[in-house]
Amino acid sequence: MLKILDEVDSKVLTDMKYRVWQANLALAKANLVVLTWGNASEINRDLGIIVIKPSGVPYEAMTADQMVVTDLAGNLLEEGSLNPSSDLPTHVYLYQQFKGVNGIVHTHSKYAVMWAQSGRDIPPYGTTHADTFYGPIPCTRQLTEDEVVTAYERDTGKVIVERFINDQIDPLAVPGILTIGHGPFTWGVTVEKAVENAIVLDEVAHMALFTEMLNDHRDVLPNYLLDKHYFRKHGKHAYYGQG
Image (cartoon, rainbow, N blue to C red; front, top):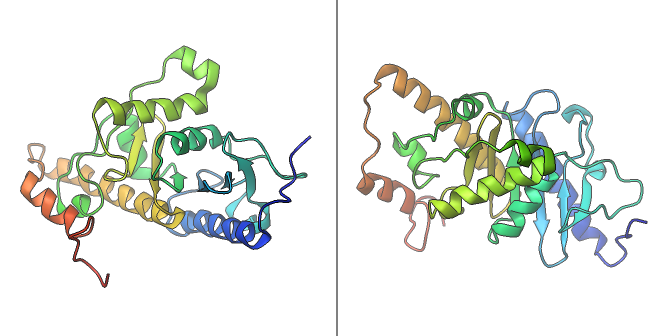
């Protein structure tokens, strides 16, 4: 028996569904997804709910009320709900481990996938990269056969978190990763920001690819320039934009 969402303010839930629906449509508009690939979600930690794209529904046919609501463990909370994205367990695990994250996006965007299939981090070659990602965009290790067979989607989240812990990377300073042989996940303090980071990640991947084609001995951005570009947009001394 599914729990009915009788204690959640209907407007709050409607607004969450609308934002997640719009975030998913934004991925298609930005040409980061084709067919039914990719998904976006949002968490409300106070209410204990996650809203995510339904599995296998074409973007052009999706409606806001089809967005799927779960608890923080990924259990469905609405009677008659569509099936959630198959990547839900990855989103759940990342939300559990990355406490400052409130929106997550997964795509199979072309240039990011090229780097993921190559099993390489994306080096910070230029200031476009540094504006959003404070250092290399990491790539995970390969999952073991046991991890794939036992809990593939959850363990995809585990290898993402493992990389951030092992390399002491702040997930809010580097809001994305490549899962080897698979594709990118990005996140942010809002689902809209997670979409923006997905767009930037694929653009940066494209630029880095051609940078290496033009100069295979190109040095990465020096730390002082990485610092300048990242911190003029982030942190208490940021001055980019209108505040």
